[in-house]
Image (cartoon, rainbow over all chains, first blue to last red):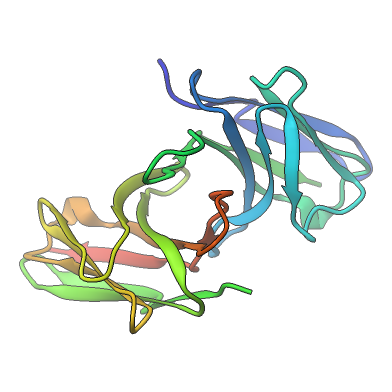
Length: 115
Length: 113
């Protein structure tokens, strides 16, 4: 399978715990995006990387959120001291910089439930 | 700030009927995307529209773009049950090459026999 993969697919945690999600993009893609989607809404942009550089972060990304892409390949998104409001689907997407359509391909998502 | 609005948010159709979903965006955009999402699943790319007057068709779905009106439409022809899903449009702001997309809230389509 050469698509975007995410792990885990589901995560249930208690409020106050830390969680980490992983995203593996399509291998030749140098851009990687994180979005958050809550029920009944469209995905909201969180942050994106070009290679290993984090180039933009949304105001939605509070200090409790941190994302990394250390070698320009896979990325991790960590949420510290989780809150119930963090419950959502976290989507990762990748694309190829400079392509005409700049089309993003989405992974299956990680569904987070904070109890 | 780029804003994207879709309407309707919910659509119930009879099989065989036609309907159009509308997507308005607030500022000039480089690219307009349509996605499909099935319950509990991720987003599947349907169309990418770049220029004014662009029209793309795939099966019973046709997407168009009017950049002057800042409007895209997704037209459904002779709906079938398999088209039941949530459809999102997304836009990327002109002048930024980041590819960050702003999404509408989606149109949940239910096709009834």
